[in-house]
Structures are given as C-alpha cells and as structure tokens.
Length: 82
Image (tube, rainbow, N blue to C red):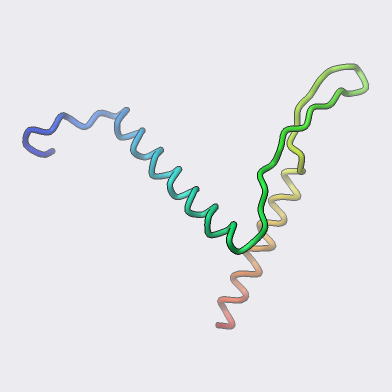
C-alpha cells in the first residue's frame, strides 16, 4: 500500500484485529469495573454421581447474562431521563 512497505499479510491483519479487540475489551472492563463491582468467574472442579470429574464456572452463565441484561436495561433507562 505504501511505497517501500512490506505487503500486508493476512496473518498480520488478523493479529492487529485481535489486538484492537483485546484493547476494546480491556477498555470496557475498566469502565464497567469503575461503575460496578466485578469479579472474574473461577473454575470449579467436581465429581458427579458416577465418579467422573467435571469443570464448570463458579457462576451460572444464564445468571450472568440476565444480570448483564438488567444492567444494560437500567443504564438505558437512565439515559432516557437525562
């Protein structure tokens, strides 16, 4: 694209896109963390009734999704009255 610059490869483009995405997620976590108390999910190991070992998150994914939906709805209501 630019004179003297090496050709833009797809792997380089993918790496840059991933870096931008990680940066956006980190920015979101920082803003969200300043507004609300957050903590990362932790892995919980357990053995079922048949003796098999399993791993799952410490919090139900549905509960987390419902909580996030409630927060977004609450924030959008606030912005409507501002």
